[in-house]
Length: 213
Image (cartoon, rainbow, N blue to C red; front, side, top):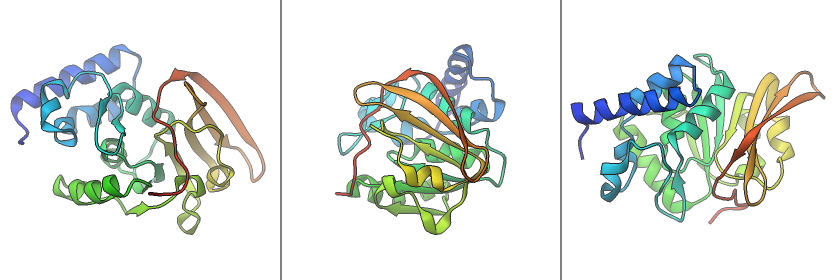
């Protein structure tokens, strides 16, 4: 599959749809305009790639709704050069968004099939995370901590303590918390031992699984 002017036009329309839903960060909207989302999906979904919807990918996972990716990314308030940990690489679309914003990205994926596929795929598009890791996202990545931001791209039944502990002071954790439906939650580390917490309504994610397979 290739990337055409038609695809770019559809991306511009998608960015407008996402902006109309309340996304105001121009860098995030530019990410949506730039990332060839149709290449992240099975070719059978190509005609639908620029709808604001989630779609299935391999290993019973989904490529998230663009609005959700934009919403989570906007909450992180990324500055170029920030070190970001992503829990759940998945298709790599959120990873690409973080890289579009100039972040240094470490990303953990626990599904071997997805990990292998995305590890090979992202560099072909010119997206080069600092490191993709096959592992358990509940543990975070202590050897690279602390992080300016951590984003969790699956529904977590609880907030893993290691993720909070791996934030810099001033760092942000964006995580959808809940069993059946999730509440998008933002934690900001205000000191070594203190965090503020804000909630931003209900979203639906595939569950965040422990261990790796």
